Image: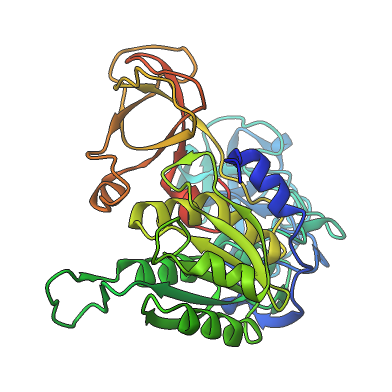
Length: 410
């Protein structure tokens, strides 16, 4: 198969996303990072009444300036009496505005005097008042189906009286790592062995997305063991992810087993790192075969698998945004694959108003696909398109780390 450019691969993969899973009703405190299945419409205005935005005095603007008797005290949560003409009410932030008042004077502009108050100026009519429905109007849509629920979104649902939300069930994902050389962390290494970082890495990437994980210990490079495990898991999960065994070596058995027990739809992407990515299905269960090198596994999950999983979870926004930065590195030779460079971002101290010059992108160490420490240090991935070079001072697109890790594509 020829190398497939990433945009073409994503377009192809996203046409093969199954319908979202069934919905469940969850209490608000369990909804963070879940995908909303049903839009939320406000049943009430927020705020539900005109209220004070300041600690101060509720007055009639026509009575100002001057000295006014204070006839009532209105803390939050108390229903006030109407305000008599020529009087003031002591009022606190969030408290309902008394009928008849049209202005709030903040306490810094007033001088308490016994049972009265001296208003020192003439504020604008309506000053420091939050009007009913100024935040949310009743019957308006406040949350839209397909959005990932953040703490602030859950708080917004609470503000309109929701106690629970309809969300999609979390996808169940099987994870299989392969390789005779792999040893689970915590065990002793024999000569020629390495610790299995991919299993933990992919599992935690899935956990950040709110997915349920069925993790399988690393399998040896045995085609029958690999194939039978994939076939068994395929009937139990919504998606399978493997690490290793998808390249062209004699011990790379995963791709062949996907093809033998199901179908192989995609193999080899025109990206660096991450070329030997495979996609297919076993028992109609989608299977992603990630490369074995840890950086390649991390990058292909972030760039390819995460968007697919989020769309399969029912999310609308799935692709990370690109931000501009000034390159502090050179790529003198044009490549045949789109390259994703691990970079640290530093604020540009040179005064400039030009777009894309707020941040400087600096390589975060060794860019080899086996050097996971540079992923740990980086703030994002700088994108070098196919056939392009980069000179220091050029503006490059950067995918920020949070958008590569977390459900929101921001």
